[in-house]
Image: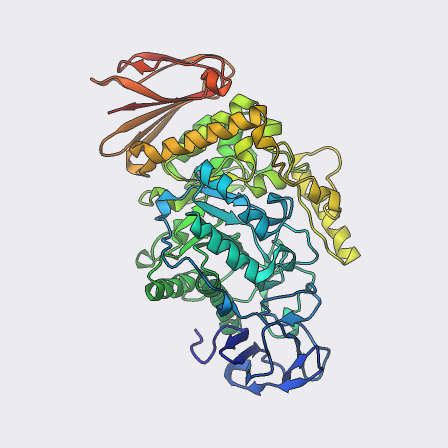
Length: 610
């Protein structure tokens, strides 16, 4: 691991001077070219392939490029700003100039997170960080205390999900750039909202990717679904690891971000004695000691391997939490969704019960879709180490047409799916617009400027849907229409069933926070039992002072279920079939222990015994 004097790569303002740090191990000479005056500032060679310079000629806003061996000038791979896009000059940004007002901010404990995933470009009409800031009161009233922002690293053009970023340190110029993100985080903290930033450390996008010109950032030892793997364990990997570790620290230290969600970490290939994620964890823990603030690391991982979330003392990488796609798949199949592609592994309500009980559905048994035994058991992992959802950007946007649950399931089933997520002994996550049953689809969109690459993306989308046996044509991801049609409609939350759904979500989230049995994520006191014939599920959640029973009916018929036999009566806390939620009929308010309850079709009930 590289120590001082190797600080953050790129250009860092330090008082009246700028410090330049560039890794170009094969270059015989390196220099900074100032775009405005054409001045060329030679860099001094240092150890391990680094080049450095301290100068007073690089100022806030200066546009510059790097020259290697007198070749064509290139943008800085650690640029903080690309005002003219991925092919233009880099711009100097003083990250220390922002005046923060969040000195008293306290990042909530992870188990309290109610997460809301959003995409900056389609969340608001403006499609900017300021557009998000204008809607924070909506999120507060909903009960959200953590937003997860899809990747903002600079990508080609102005329209992209963010996973084609090619400047991991630069904040997308069309979103308001670095200063706009700092302002948004400060505003979120003032409203009591934590900020999770989605970052991509498993690959870099194709257009505007100049990393090969600088050094061995990639390795031929491995491949990912998106191209060559980043070099985390081959020759020259020390500097690549340093590059991404410093990126992690920058978001926490300079942007006051509260947590990172690291995309598809199963595609990070690293056989080093200390895995990159474990090294990141160690450095983040060091930063937390310095700042006296917790910083969380969340991963997307489809390996069902507890090594990722186990602490280093147990041989794990120490990640704080992970997305659980399997809960989503089991829930959607239970609700009547298709069983194609990766959904084919899931048996509906029996697997949903297993997800509640065991977190991983596949924890060692044979997986037909993978054609192998798969997964490990998550026996001692706590509830906050798993994040569940009925929708997210992948599960919506990776559909050929980008249909949301509002288009695929009935109003009653949408409410039931919300109940399944928000009563789980895990961290719940909503996808933007879900709370009011947004009607607009969320489709895949990009804005590559290379025509051949744009066509390759179109063809790749068609090939991807072959596994789902999808009919028809996918929307063209390159058109502005596809992007605009994916934007949220902010007039809907005040209208009819959309307002009703919003009120439903708000009350259900408030109940999750208020009931100890739901709020405390005690997996050892959680038990789910499914009835496959009825397509019903009984979920029991306990705290020291309370037991909650959640009755779920995924069938289209009225079903009879029995509450546990106790000396005390069961008191109803929530009823999705109540007429106040436009349901067919409310169930009994109080039920004696061991007695039956009539459960309306596609509905759920919550009872407590105190």
